Length: 382
Image (cartoon, rainbow, N blue to C red; front, side, top):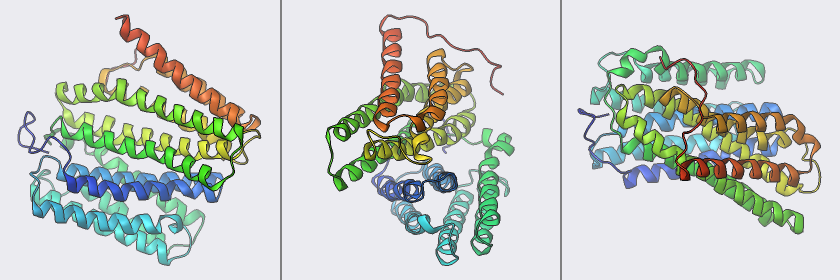
């Protein structure tokens, strides 16, 4: 957030921000391991809720330090936020069970949201006391109440409400978001960094599974296919998607809309999709010749579909029309999801990797031959 949109105090991530990101690597891993240890839909839902809280905390921190000169004050602020996030990451696997660790998680989150609210008020980014940071603090208070509430439906319900309240802030207060100035260089890089973190979880999850096992030929093929899939997902974002985000942020008259819809909301879909892919790919490496057990079987195509769907949403919000190719692939991967439980893990992995590779090949052909990109026309952005 800066005085003029044409200038940023620093155009690259500071070393303190990158140190803060290291805590997020651990946090994402902790959330991703929840459905690994408990392969059921409840654990998947809890993992998504944890990712949502950690993601929103990271977004809040990133936007708070955006456009500010790197200084000792900002470094200590990031270190304090990082310590809160570290507490959250450590207690994340048990945030829904018992009362001790859920309370530590909730209090650390509340302290973090309070630090962000104080800092954003000090900067004067929002002239009104009620702003998205205020609403996020209300959600953080609700998580403290959830920590002392009975386990099960009540606690899970309070978590869902708290996350919805926090995410609703920028949408409900959209007019106030339009008044905030954002630079165009720093933010795309920061959000791309989180995509790299989520992609790295696929490598870490499959690598740890492979290191713990005596792999046969089929499992080694699954490892190779997982790496190929990771490269394909990277290509979708960094070869074609990243430049579109940067262009949109530079040219859109209301940058707050891009920051809200494309970066904050849209990238959340990308991150959740990548984490689900990591859990599903781990299961495919563990059971390459057999059908993967439990809900893990569905997560690989579901996560890939969600990742591609995230691009459809962000392109619609940036340019008013998602591409035909990515929309078709998202639908195809979604259709594969219910069938995945009946296929060997290696087959599911090969299909998903092949579909993503084909999409990249198709888009490369479109660009190389200078053809117009086929799009689906929907109502223009609000």
